[in-house]
Length: 450
Image: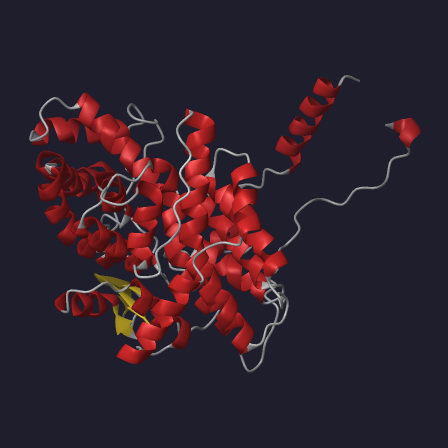
């Protein structure tokens, strides 16, 4: 048998043996994707890190949609963001301290924490050179390999004591921006034949500004660019324990594996287009709409094209309007609202007001067209943070290749906080769900009879 024939044979076997009818899940009471019939998540754990609220359960058990709220350690993220903005300062480092420790830092604690992070942001020379040699077209893959490599440079990589977990967490939070920026510049050099820039982080700057510095160089970004990137990092830092990548980190952490292996699992999960790559899809959809809609202010044209998307006649023909809908949020996604506030100012600074107005129109019409299209099947929905985050990143001059890595650069904070919590329960238990086997039994057939 030729190799090609063998591969076709195996592929056909998989198709025949792996297809489990959707109806069987319901018949056997299996909650597909760990989702209940009302689309809420199956309660699989308890946490004190973050909370995502999109509905409230009434006495009769019916879920009532409410404006979305996101909490970090019991503090409403909207209050956290507005409190930081009121003082006209950056807040990602403060958010990291809050999520890791459970408490807001004093000024002295925050200054010490920030200085420590900036001091350890540079990579070991060997690690830098290894990134230079890594080949690949996806920075998330390079990030995962680089994180696994950091295990080598850790003097105590396997101990899961509180002190060691905190040390490793801060080290990873500090080094993610450097790894991502270097990986992009290598990718740009290898794939596009551009000059290779390796800019060292500056101890006097913030995480957000250091990333822009390493990506773009001095003088190529504005104060508003720094502020809105800092805001995006705050808003993506955590999203409760139930999102796919955080759950991956908690599952692997429950085995007491090392920090680097566990975080690499989270990166692999976030890399998936159904999780961390959503804002890339949103940007591509918006670009497609701008190319096909002549009058960006025409409700009729926008509605017509959105209907074509839903009918699988336009864009990628999946029938999905990207950036609309969320697993938990119903009436509003608080992150989208907070990012939109500053995105409007960014659009004015960059001369992109027409594009921003178009996005606002698409946001408004998407919800109305979707409701009309689904009729009685329509559930309360809203645009999510991805609807505006891609626009923000493009507007401050960041390439699409770093959109998902930016998500990881923020979420490493939440991953670390949940890992620390998972390993410090008073009664630890390895996470091990059950699967029901529905394959019929069969006997062994001798080779001569096959």
